[in-house]
Image (cartoon, rainbow, N blue to C red; front, side):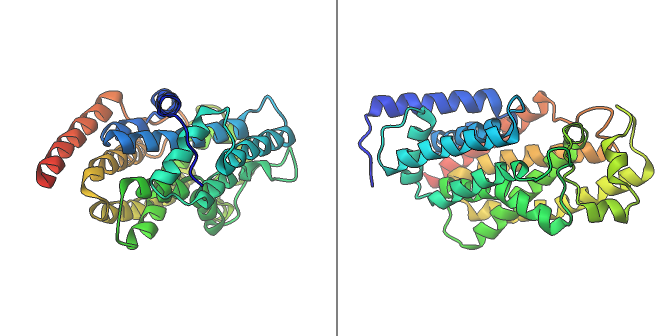
Length: 307
């Protein structure tokens, strides 16, 4: 069902989404800039939707049960907007337009929200959030990152069905990079995303990871554990390179910027010997800007070749 929203209100809704993306999307926003404006608006809307869901799930000023209830109410409001109601949340207005414009299955957004609620479904409040195997972790990565990739390629444009699996695996590469960067912060929040089977294989106990001395550099077995995850991520970045030529030409520079920034983050972690405990890895702003400049040059070349 197509909803007749005014251009003025829709324009304000997209403006709000762009503001959220500019404020919150530390790595993503550099890629957004390289997109043509209609696609950029749609990507910003999806990011804002994801950000709101994530913020509700992570707001530790509320209990897990209350966060779950707040997310349920938020999703009820979204579904009412989909059915034709007048949304009070401007993000819903923009997302509804983007899903219609780029034929994004609404089920993908449901999966995205399912991903951010996974951490709320553990039975014991005091037990750490963990994943037994890499297969379990992959499912988490699929819901919180691959689904975003599957939405994004619909906005980017593609015609080859191979793009879908490659986008899924590119999302896994990004999420594994995030997991490596955030090991210390996640442990402080009683979360360990490194699979328990990997901890056991490298002789690292869950208790040792959760209770390690603040800012202590990694021991040899911890470095080996993190390196094994880094090697997995590197394999999935190969999928990102195969995805690029399957995306519509005018969108490729944006995807190239995003992949380049995330891969640069992984390489900085690797170059630091997987020491993610004494300092948080990041890509310097100057480096991101240089990647963006190259990406914008690719935009110009793409437009010349299309013309």
